Length: 331
Image 1 (cartoon, rainbow, N blue to C red):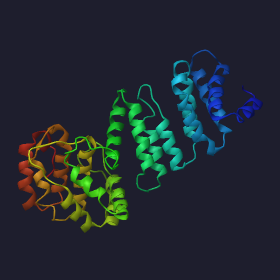
Image 2: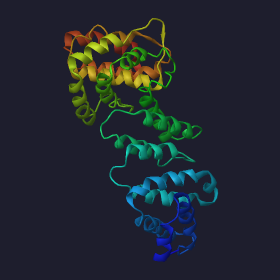
Image 3: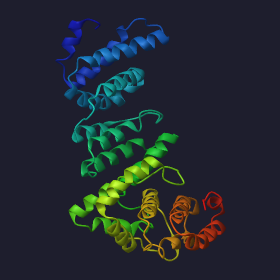
């Protein structure tokens, strides 16, 4: 298999047969003894296998590799990892959205400790700044199902990222349906298509991190879609859609981060039209208070954009009601 002739012959195989041949070819790599030298030789061989593949075929081979994942993982798991790394590193800078979604839907993991983020990142980059698509949403649902049962910090983070993105999919049920974000979601879905696209650009900025306040990168990325939407229109629609419920207030995994991010946007607007609305979030009876802490941090950040004579009273109440967060709220 090390000859140029053998590599040329592999190029005529179907995608599935190419994957089979590539995985089995690692048996001929020297040295065969387990060592750093063996690992390096196998990594080099994987890149050699991929080096002669036309760029347009690489996405199909990644899909074919994952299609063979269940049957090959018991005996060829390490070889698959070497090959997937080589295929990914050789991908062109931009793949089509259809190809990226196919890779996302096909990707499988056994442990959830590596490569979990990459297929989502690839699919998002393939959008080229466009709004999320039904194909992307469906691929995400498939990928979410494939992650079920895996346990790692990375998987937990990605599952939250998926929930925040699927919040924007009208075919995805909101769980729980009376989440604080339900009014925002209903208002967004009711928009006419062009306006919904503008809001979709804004919603691509939803932050799923544990940051208490946005960083410079988020702020820079957020200003353009906010300006495209229009500050006055954003404030008007947020004021209309964010409904303050009575009784216990549940928060969905994705919805709480959508609301948090909308409060960050509200701080950027410097508008006073939300001064009666947003402070009311401090006093709600949240079903799971620990899930609301990021909202409270966001209110603290929003208060920084307000005059002291307005902010001080609300900040004092926030610190008293939320001691877990209040000590970290800036004046």
